[in-house]
Structure formats: structure tokens, C-alpha cells
Amino acid sequence: MRVKLTVAYDGTDYCGWQVQPNGVTIQEKLNEALSDLFHTDISTIGASRTDSGVHALGNVAVFDVDSRMPAEKIAYALNERLPHDIVIQKSEEVSTDFHPRFAKTRKVYEYRILNRTFPNPLLSRYTYFFHRDLDACLMNKEAQTLVGEHDFTSFASVRSQTNTFVRTIYGISVSRDEEDVITIHIEGNGFLYNMVRIIAGSLILVGSGQRQPGFIRQALEAKDRETAGPTAPPEGLVLLHIDY
Image (tube, rainbow, N blue to C red; front, side, top):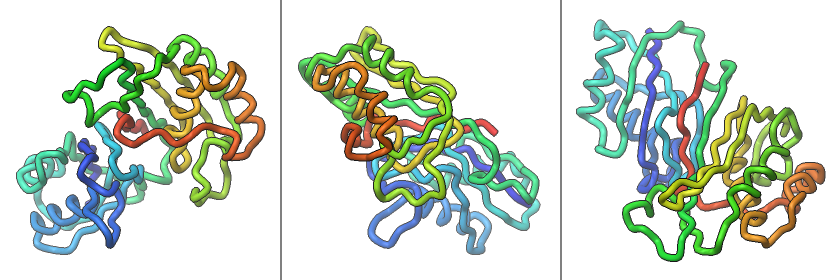
């Protein structure tokens, strides 16, 4: 059977999702726990290859196994074998042709910025601290330029490996809460390598007055990575969920 896992994790101490030779990853820990549970080598396929330090509440992975264990019980057994910062939220059986990366999806991310004079140590793992004043209303207005189907070359890492830079953003909002946390909430059909973090870095430039209004539109139209802002640090980024 093919089993779909919904996975939450604190990415601080991991070198991203995908297995690699030079550091511990989320996928590596999942594969080890599954192989131990079923006494055979098992390799997962992930929906989103989050970067080093990036968090998730609802990443998705699948694996195949020949077992009598009900799919919905696998989450309980796995969580007993996983470290405390990786937790399976749900396990369920899916069709054998289901592929988490090739199926049509709606991905939802948030990027959180702690915008105040001094850091808060209780938020340091899950927000990017930025001490200069940010205008969240202006950032929200600028962000609306990105809604719709566009070529996002300017907002993708030069290391992106893709056949097309065209993606669709269904919605984006920027808001500040009473704790001075500014949240960039963004939904789309898919995201390029570092795309959300580059969008965040670009909006920060506008919100802090380092760039003038219209900067986001100019960068989008230029289709040139050098015209957009920097890649914001990973700790502020969370993959909230993936809808199929």
C-alpha cells in the first residue's frame, strides 16, 4: 500500500528536508524511523523540499510498504521513533499512483518577522528579527502586485532547476499583530527555490523605506534576480499546509 504522511517539524537543527551527505535532514530521520518500524529499507518521497532551518506544520510525504498495519495507526508508531522536533500529524492510505509533487496542489506558506527594538528569545527560532521600523500596510499594498500568474524569475534563486518560472499566486497578505510580529501569508500553486524568502526580503526593503513603492512591480517585470531584494533568513518561514 501507499501511505501519505502529514509531517510537522522544527527545522532549526536540520539541513533541510532532502537526504544529503553533509548533514542530518528531516527525510533521513523519517526513512530511518520507517525502516526500523517495518524492518525493511523504506525511502519517502516528499512534496516540498524545504531548506535548512525552514519549518513546517503540514509538509507531505509518501512511501510504499507491504504491511497489515492500518495506515491510520502508522502515525502513532512513527512518533514513538522520531525525535521530538519531527511529529507525524496524520497517516492515511492513498492510491498507488498518488505522487505528492506531481499532483495539483495549493501550497500555503507564512513568513514571520519580529519587528521591534529588541529580540524576544522565545520567538527567535520561528521569526526573523528586524529592528528597523516596517510599514506593514505599505508591504501589503506592494505585495498585491504578485497576485495572479506571472514569471517569477526575479524572485527565484539562480540555483533553481525548473522548466518554467511561471507560477500562480492565489493570494498574499501582510499584517502586524499586537506582539509586533509581521506575518506574510501567501498561497499559490507552487513556489520556486527560495521564492517566498526572496519575496519577504523584497517586501522588507519597501517596508523599511530602503526602496520606493513600485519596487516589487519593477522587479517582477524585469525577470532578473538581481533586481529583487535579498533572500530573507530561513527561521521565519513555515510551510503551513498543502491542499490536494
